[in-house]
Image (cartoon, rainbow, N blue to C red):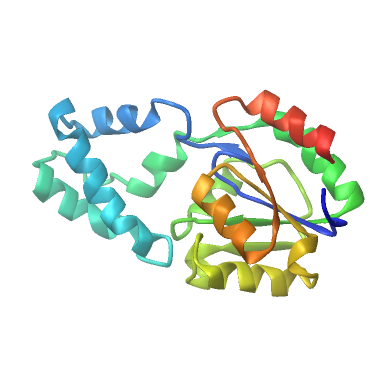
Length: 205
């Protein structure tokens, strides 16, 4: 590492937990909704069009009526889009030793793009290893999202260190590039091979 690290931020989805990254879970979700394979691309485009708003506070459940109408879906009244995502997430047990080692040597935090109430539900399902985070920055609460420069500014202020003293562990290339541009050190976590990524990160620390 070029500079002494004083603070490490971890992404949640694809790093601290297993999300949809490197899996076929998007396809599973779409099949569960009753979509035809010919509709998959249109669904992804629809969802990606709203995701920036969801990450800064738009309730994802407000999209359910739009989904029903646009794709002619027959969903039960009890259907929750939020829980449809969360129930497909899994623990990443390979990250536990990394977090323990990091906590011994540095202050640590979460920096994550989240949908409203998603992080609470992830915690309720015990998907995140028990860790005493020094700070948590949830996009849906701070109304800023990666890769906006402003969220890195806020995270740096919360960490109370210089930008070049922060290491960001993230699986999204565009977010890694944005953090680098802001002056942070970065580790691109390969969510398609969690065990190796955690081993490499542990060796780095």
